[in-house]
Image 1 (cartoon, rainbow, N blue to C red):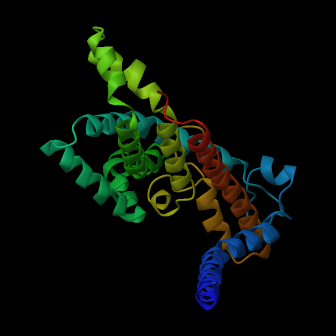
Image 2: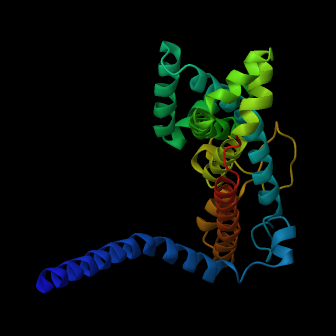
Length: 281
């Protein structure tokens, strides 16, 4: 009996050790990436780097202020285009679980989520850049909005399915119109999950470079016109990293550090919202 207990304890310890080792191996690439980006990027971060524009070849210094502003503009544009459509589609799917149209939308969401980002960039190029005959922030926002849609739709649908049906039933029984029931009862009850999905979708598109190569294209000057080319952190990192100048390589590390901090912050905020703001009953 004593030997059986000891054997079980040994197996338990061995199993936990294997699980811990595998977890460490899976997290090691992430820690190495964060270490190298922090080590090489944080030394570049200063006020001049954050507040100045890129300088021409041959001039020392410069910064990524226009890229930061451009990234924020692209986030606002893509969010403005995708959030209303994504929430509306999520509501429809939650309310029509077994309909043919609902099943078709679900299949489309799965397919859309698996499409490579560069293909979405090419589609946005054909839809917007070619007719307008110019690269623009608008075309970049459309490409990123398409990438945001699957995450927003899926999280909205799953969140609204968790809202107790008796809340909607009670509201409708009191004579409240269906649209007001959805806007005033159902959506507020699941707002935490919807916000989490929105933030996760923003975190996903923040670091995308491929679609922007065909749409926003990049701009070393300051621009807030949505119909003109605009810079972004992912594109600026690509541009600096591909250059033959060591100083620009260091700038690429600095821009990478800013982008990683932004992405991690969005993920932490989303995690905080999902853990603290539960479904409201």
